[in-house]
Each structure stands twice: as C-alpha cells, then as structure tokens.
Length: 161
Image (tube, rainbow, N blue to C red; front, top):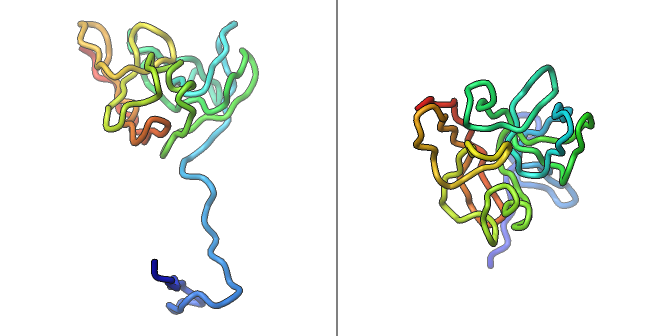
C-alpha cells in the first residue's frame, strides 16, 4: 500500500499535511441528543424507535396510530428506565450489537444487509423488515441496514394506509 500525504487548508491555502500536524476528525458518525423516557413504567432499550411527547421527552413509537408514529430518533443507551434521561441518535449511522438489534427487530444475528426497516405496528419501539399493509396502520421507514450491526437512519414521514 502506498503512503499518501493528505491535503489540508491552512489560512485559506491548500497544503500538504506537515510532519507533526494532525487532522481533527469528529469521533461520531451521527447526530446525538438526550431525551427523557416519558413512559409511565417501561424501559426504553437500545435501538428502539421513539417519538417526542414534550420538549426533550420521548416514548416508544408504534405504527398503529398517527399520534405515535412520527419517529424522532432511535434510543442509543442499553436501557433507560421511566423518568430517566438517555441518549438518542437523530441522524446518521446507528451502531449496536447483533443482540441489541435482535431484541428490537425480531431477528437472529442482527440486521440483514441492504434491508429497509420500518416502524413495527404491533410492538411499541420495535422495528421490522416488513412494511405494514393493514388499513389504518402507518408505514414509517426507519433506516437501511449496512451491516449486521449498523443502520443508516433514514426517517420518513408516516404514510397512513
């Protein structure tokens, strides 16, 4: 493999990266925020889709009613009990373990590459590889799997069937 020297902009001019200099690369590949779990008693776990109920408060989204189908983010923290705050991912890549994806997508071995995932109409917070088809449910695209552990978050507006 060839060794390459990246180009950088210094004082408005393009230059080679100089010895001893470094490139500042953001650590995250996503947009993150903090929400309060507004569920009355249920925990929200990693990978669950959530909708906003008030400023910085969220509940598990579900594609069975318009009021609960507008997905704002996927929960990032392993588990957050009711009333506590947790991190969410609102845009970009979501990386979880295969076991975490299995718990919210009903899969075995994580996500399936190239598969589009939708908000589940049956189980609050869950996602599914099968788009809803029942009249009265809503189709909400959540994202597309780019590996067994990574999803590109592509949140769509709910479409009422």
